[in-house]
Length: 256
Image (cartoon, rainbow, N blue to C red; front, side, top):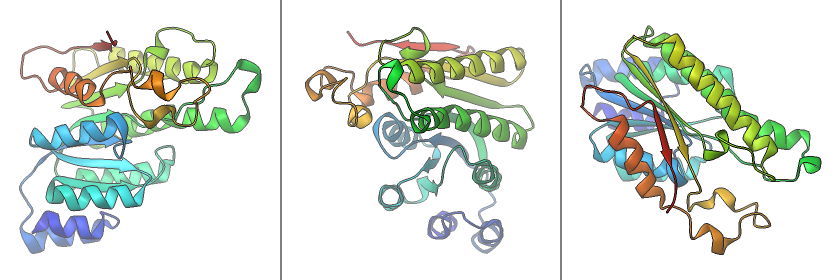
């Protein structure tokens, strides 16, 4: 009952959350995975498979219709938050509210948008759109670390093979991903030897709508040769959620 109530109020008010915990006895701490960009593509597959593994997923996205569908489909196992990952006020409020719902075990920074153009064709809007993913990664990681008191947290930063090399029509996208990689490597150093674990994920092309606005660069025919998002999500979660006494620091996933 408690989680159904939370789904209805959409976690927009801390007072409502506290009231619900008291009214419906929601005191038991549940294990939570936060996933940004989880209403489509790889993010959606990560949401589905995380729920199948028994986690409560707090999904951060911008599409209210898709989020509502997921709330209805998964009920108490899925809680959607609508907002911009680069909006600091939204991020702080959201993570504060999620921390009241249970034990945040994993943060998966997945949100991001591409811009595939030749170097001379980029505009300020293209740069801003790409950089939102980097900003969101930094904001969500920083705030989640704070509410977790910088312990007992796994941060998974999903980037791209574009973070490992340069590409002709991906100058700004690569710049963003190289920035995300730099941030990820710095987090690893900052929390080495602690209970905070940081994993960098570098997938190649995935068969999703990611390329729908760039058909001059990636045709639908070419996209169909890319990796299945369900396979990529499974590979990531199998490594990240392993019970073995080890941490996979980097995951590079390439298509055959």
